[in-house]
Length: 307
Image: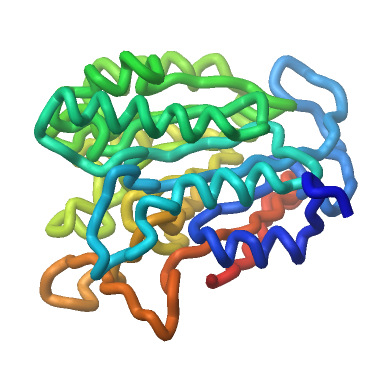
């Protein structure tokens, strides 16, 4: 096997070394391993589309340093990049869902971290890599430094018949989406048909998972209300550093594990704290997830792979 080739089993093993890749098919389509096509039409009446998949990376926290939490913290992003690059068939795109860097008060250091993160991320083979901020990247300066390196904090794009919508619920230090962006979301959704497949990326959960732990979006319910009239909506988010499935009406919300450190289950401990490193179970709580979607039946299959 050539050095740039890797089968599925070897990919899982490699990620087990590096930790934290969330591996997902493109929503609205069958996974690439099924070698099937979507039997239907997409936005603007697009013809039958071939299957594809994307890779989601979340909560990389580049710059984080604490040997009691992760003694290999300086290697994690590069290892995730290496694991993704080793895929023989590259994903159609890669999405980083926030907290690219670890929070820091100093503006110069924040920019240095964002720049260093971007340099490592630029080593990805995939030609399409997209980003969004987390509160660690954007809350202290309302996204000013993030925008210098990565551009808009909220946006939309279409890919092979799927609408992807990126919502920024972190640049506002209050943890809100804000009236301006909600108006944009309403106008954006108005361009879609009610049965179009829509995937939403956020960093914080839109729903009130645990406000005391900052696991919510203050005006997230308004975004959910705007999405509810659409029949095929799925939300991917990060922030909570663990896998969780939550449903609001017919909308499924799926959280992603972190590539850096795990956090406890909501209200399982009195105070939210990072889970310490366990040498007997290295990378415990870090992992990835494979998601298969069947848009014709609006069913989804998830397979979790612990590290």
